[in-house]
Length: 290
Image (cartoon, rainbow, N blue to C red; front, side, top):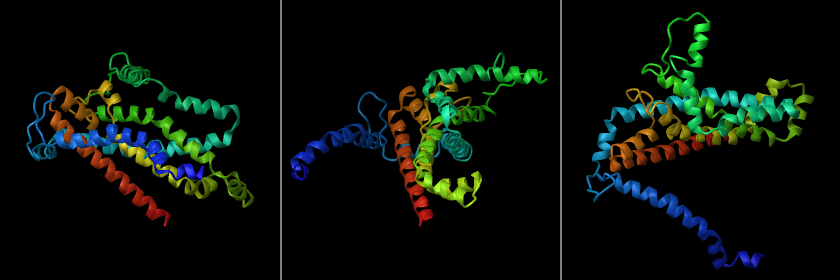
């Protein structure tokens, strides 16, 4: 076996398929996006090189700035609302055990199994100002006037609620798996020392969950940047770009406005932001570990 794996031809044959997929599916599209980002390509005809014009326009584009701000709000919602609740729920599920653990684990993950299209239209009905569930609840408490939750002033908060709720199951499941991998002996030692549930959670569970938290936070921020499907189906980025996100704006510019070059410039900035976020978070968590 050692002789087999020391053979360079065997190693190349094992690595080549994955490397080929990476080059064709990831590296080549990124390189093409960088190239088209410097052109005025509309998706048809011959692209014309225009230098940094797309990036200069992007820098002054209020809608793109709004999309980044909304992504920042969503990232904060994920990190400071969704994830703290998810990790506490995961810890509670780990403690209750039995059939209740399996039942609630499935219940919390159900929204992630449902189609994004179904989720978006479900919440459209919930937010409907005429017959929506939320307005019916408000009417039951004596509020006479209906509230349009998807108006320009409140739409972004309504969308954030949907996105935070919809992604809760994934975050909880990752934290739950991380907690399950902690050595039970550590909990037994903490119990012998007289540590309560909260003391054990803050001094045993959380410190040992740092690698999982790092992965989850990184994925949350990148997910906040690339939100599209739910936003596209729920509000389409409106009204007046109040719920615009970078990925949705990229789609609108590239495939609706036929500004393929400009859309690729957005994609290049998006990739750069994702890489920067990953590097920064890796640095922050590494310093904390030291």
